[in-house]
Image 1 (tube, one colour):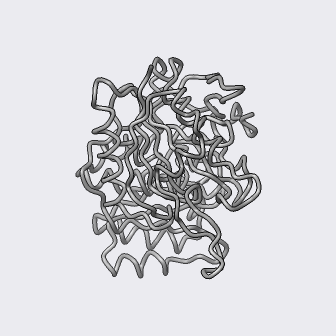
Image 2: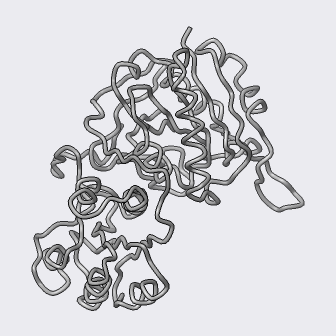
Image 3: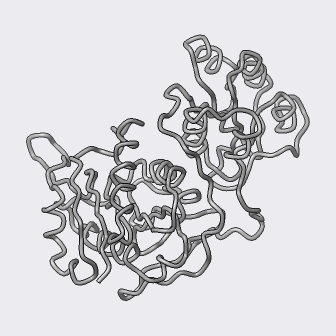
Length: 340
């Protein structure tokens, strides 16, 4: 029987409603969650690792490095075939990429959680936990070099593409550029496409003061100017459309670049890329000429994770640009808006 390490960190999957608090609070540890699926041991031999009850919105980089080290230590064992990380869904699209950027080797890591607490009708924790263990233990995953994936509501999604598209829907996690890698159906793991090349960075720390600035109507350079004065390590600008902003925002970014502070240009859209198609002042082409890096198909939050880890690893210039760029071509006109 295959063996899977399951790292429990908390999140909605671990919560129940507390009348005194007036809402959901974390109370279910790893043993409690395993008890919700008594037959889980029939899928794989489980190695449970309990790392507390932390809402996903509370994670900092130090905590994510600790979780990553726990996972990597577990799967470094010859008798462990894969790992599952159980956490809150609020930041899965960021944390999954964090783990993926650090992960080396063919063993799969599957991140999962729940959209309902254990007190709510339709509690999806047991199903998602079961599906995640199935994926991590499967022969299909073992031979596919999946890296880190998210498994929620039966969908299997790559860490670099998955996006939380709805605040509370069960099928919130979608891969809007390439489509899902596959699904878990009737107890079977079905992979429909290969993961392909992945980004990687050998980081043991992250730059803490990397800020995401979202361009909107009437967003000038004030956010960048203020944060640069406060000692920013870097900026990710989530621009409108295909990479366009007010010229004043670009001017502020140019001042940061002149001081050696890296700036990354992404799109604020949930899919697609920022590029060089527009050359008016503040257009994407003018950002690139100013020295900004392009984020490929990474969303703003994901680009911030990559930039933080890249800077923490000491990357600069072309090395940083390579980390941020897509490792394989994606044709936007072929993207899957509905991965299922």
